[in-house]
Length: 100
Length: 425
Ligand SMILES: Cc1cc2nc3c(=O)[nH]c(=O)nc-3n(C[C@H](O)[C@H](O)[C@H](O)COP(=O)(O)OP(=O)(O)OC[C@H]3O[C@@H](n4cnc5c(N)ncnc54)[C@H](O)[C@@H]3O)c2cc1C
Image (cartoon, rainbow over all chains, first blue to last red; front, side, top):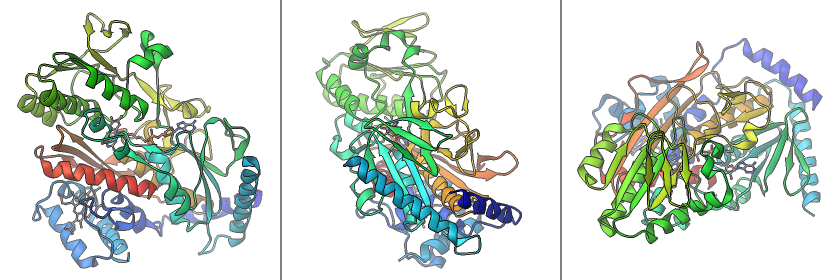
């Protein structure tokens, strides 16, 4: 265990300087939607929420942009999309588009 | 037998940790080690599943929960109103075991030794961990309401603020109440678990009365000076639907109770009800409050928002209702689930020797029913702000429903089914 801690400390130092985005940022951001749209975008069948897994990135981004602008009427998605930057929504769309 | 199994498991966990250390820093290093999760509610079940899923099985996870199955507080108000059953809000831990490889122990954690990194279990023995996640929810400060501070009183006056036997008893009390009776619900000063929850309960009980005991009344004794969540929408529902049924009394803190007569004692007044429902003030679940980690106001755990790690005690992460929240963040199941995911991601990075995600985001939605079918919501999104080291609500985002409607009632049930699956399926 001591050795693991030592290596961990060195790694932490190495990565702290970089300020790089987390390699799993898209995954982490997409998980904030899973409470309603299901783990990895697979909604519970018959639960009344839309699955997002496997939708094309272009379609997802279009819908999200339309919610954000108000063009697509919604009960809640217009309020949620405004909480994320366009870059974040793009990462989320990448993640869901890649799910099978 | 049990002990043998535990020992074998711990050996396996240690081996996994040692394996991980061989990978080093370069890309492709894997997280390893053993994480103990205390509490299988909204926060704990989520962090357990996501640790296993995101580490692709390389992190060993033991979830310790005292109850045999998960019982959801969300939707429990509909059980109290008689339109849903206990079965509807109960979910088994079986998938966490069989599908995700979480080791689920039905046991009570008596103490955490944060220096030795081990927990003491009620059924005997100790278990060591590399990191621990506490998601114990809340415990009540019964000493604040002296008359309620004994077992007999607590068998008669329900809080039903943890779903389970109390939910069933409160339902039975309402069924047994005569038409023309009064149900009083007492709300503690904020912060408390689920800000809109008491007002939702008042609404759905009033709906039950209107349909079944039309001469009966609901009185809300609120310790706060005003409605704490979705005020405009709740007040509109009370005016439109329950004008003759619901009475709202602000600044009405319950200081004590007389159990025999079902009387709530306020500062200058008394209120006698046929069914008295008192939600006492609460604080972080005892195991978090008593582990020697830093608390704020002696009630809630102070955490680092990049990792949900205690600010005082390395290796101890605390999530859900037990924490001192970031600005405008409610104590909700939705939020506890989001804390769980933030923590799973952070722990996997830390166990692999990487820095945690520097830009975490969490979001909240709380749906509330105002009758058996119509619901309203409140939503918010919180992004990490490096200057304040807090997740801060995004201005101009989130908000409340335009109006109560059945579509949102369907969304509320859809939310419940999906979040239960996100934690436990
Ligand atoms: C009536 C009501 C309605 C609500 N409605 C909503 C809603 O619509 N939406 C929403 O988002 N939230 C809602 N909430 C709030 C939500 O239930 C809580 O915010 C949520 O449960 C918090 O999750 P948690 O993991 O912190 O605690 P919990 O879900 O309470 O889980 C804690 C678990 O830890 C276990 N535990 C504690 N200590 C130990 C120990 N020492 N050893 C072993 N096990 C232990 C407990 O048995 C429990 O299972 C509602 C709450 C109520 C009361």
